[in-house]
Length: 354
Ligand code: UD1
Ligand code: UDP
Image (cartoon, rainbow, N blue to C red; front, side):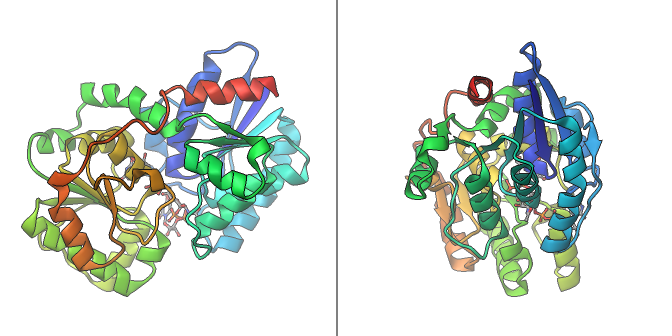
């Protein structure tokens, strides 16, 4: 059986690492990795392959950055011959990036069986590029692997329940597997902060970075948190770094870092008092690590995390961010929402059964 994974962005490498390990443990299956090149900096791509033990992609399409249409169009052109040549039994897509969208369109037009990992997520905000990508990937896929019950419910509402399977969350598998490895290999950065109070923040969503007033409000709120709650570490996505430089914003208490490797990120998440983020993956990892999370968005796909102060939606409002951050000690208790850490195997069982 030939399984082709199409990936391109940081969170997809994490999800695919779990799938790759599950395939490698079986006989009679070949896993072909196609990297669109959406993320290409060493800190956004190469370091994930190294740390997560993923082999180099068999196909590296080097598409790079561009507008949504230019980037997606270039992916379509470069993916088509690869999928024709590999003739997969399944094309496997992850999450909601432009690489997911391009993989879905290309495979569907070639009549190839298509599976979507992390299906059924909805923010109900069609201005988010990711929402469009998810809707298309779910519509076109033959098998829809849902991490949670709310994701299953969303697909039921859209008439897609017959193709949906609840498998648990593949990022939870990754978290359980790699946190031990991270603990045993503390980086200089995570060792420096272990046992000291700090908050960890990430900001990269277009809705925040591409609106100067929202980005400034969030950065100013993080400054306030660093004065009133705990020092804030802010590893920057390159998009955010560019926007901060363009604004001419200078940190006073917030500590700006480059993108952090995955294992360091898990270590920092584990020892942070509090996590503030607009990332889907980091919201979940905060929940897995049982750390209070303040989400810097107006809505979330991960609605099940919004209980008992475990995750609080604060948007880009400085007052709401400061209030949610100040209440971090009241968060919890957390529960087990994301499966048993064997979703990679469950997904593979469904694919093998056809
Ligand atoms: C993409 C996904 C988003 C996901 C995020 C994960 C889409 C529409 N968005 O957003 O859902 O949460 O990945 O991190 O697919 N850049 C670099 N080096 C890189 C990669 C990007 O400098 O290695 C810069 C470029 O200026 C680029 C910008 O970041 O234009 C945005 O990159 P892009 O891949 O288009 O979107 P992300 O913001 O990364
Ligand atoms: N991540 C990381 N280093 C960082 C920021 C994020 O390793 O500096 C990891 C994070 O732990 C999670 C994934 O990248 O596993 C989330 O990706 P991102 O926030 O870029 O995208 P999203 O999940 O919002 O699509």
